[in-house]
Length: 157
Image 1 (cartoon, rainbow, N blue to C red):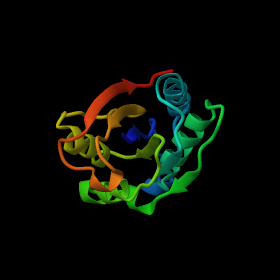
Image 2 (cartoon, rainbow, N blue to C red; image 1 turned 135 degrees about the vertical axis):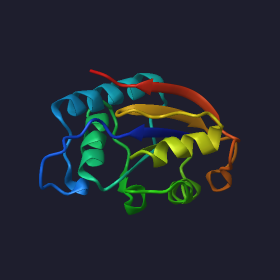
Image 3 (spheres, one colour; image 1 turned 60 degrees about the horizontal axis):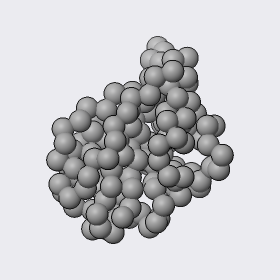
Image 4 (tube, helix red, strand yellow; image 1 turned 30 degrees about the vertical axis):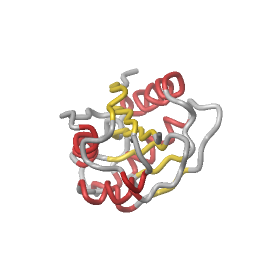
């Protein structure tokens, strides 16, 4: 049974003149990303893959996560996660081929919509929010309302 770990990026700054894709994490965001990594280390089996948005805030969240882990899985930058629709995210998930848990780091509203579509649980992921989803079939067959929402956590340092 595949496990999808959905992580919304941690709190970002919004400096004037900086494009959205280049927004960095705030100090709190960096601390929360590390707290999210520690929670994942303690509560989820070691991931086999981490798929992240190319946005700077997602990249910095990813760095905070893996900084807390003994082993760092392969990290893949996935353009389709930035400004993703539910359809984009489902396409990414259905294209996975990893038996161990996969961590997906990205943005709302797409991530919350993905969790809701897969599990039928309405969930609004906050910054540094985590949803652990058990997919009862192969990744390619991940369908609406078939997965189980195993855990939800909002990391705060």
